[in-house]
Image (cartoon, rainbow, N blue to C red; front, side, top):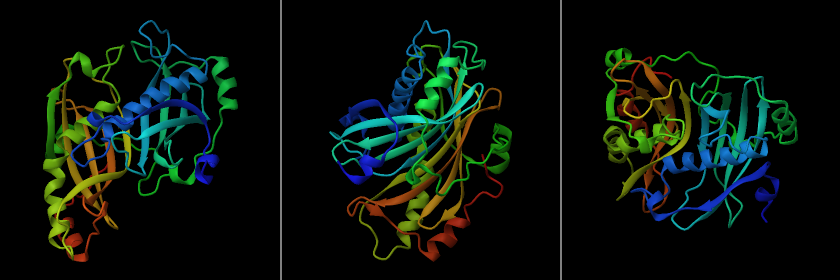
Length: 316
């Protein structure tokens, strides 16, 4: 057991591995499957809190994700063994902030961290109501402090007022990177979109959006990487409403700016029928040298060119 592994807080809430079909064109597990693992882990944490049937069709209470902060720390490749630890950071009358740590089992090193804000809600209406006493009791026993690697690094996690809407996306000329409708397979047992589908829809369309920005980074790099891709380092996702099967979804994206070797971007998940937001997010992404398996730096010249594409006023 490594020092890092020994120091990690929480109880085990999930264990498994990475399948070949979980991996994308970059050769590592795609972001949607990190969130899918986190949702399985959330079911395990719910059981530890005294709610073992929270995600069953007959549940009389369930957990709804309000917000997630994710840090992607190490790649996970096909065949990698993983497990997840979880605990409670804070709990209020109807909500809680929980910690989930995805760990490389072979080394004890962190693959990713999640700080997830959840609400105790009615399964079908999604109306928040008070936690039962047993949850407060068990939450006290599961109390954890987020390790440094789970803390926000480049994103501000302060409360915010959403600015996302289709009208504002049009006004800011945000790029449409996704458009479609949800199928029943995209939804959970209560009929709401599964949590991994927000980040998954962004991932599906990200190439057309971020590709030209990667070309700018590579075009000014010395030496120039022969093969490049992309990777996301940090994410903040807020669910504002939950689409159901048949509902349409549209993803609009824009460049906020640059930070060191990374690009700061925003993605809005919108209802193209009403113009209202389903969710909003921001992320920190890098250009990745696929041969060296390391981040390609942004030169001063590349930064200046990238900033000509930044969208003033773009936020969550």
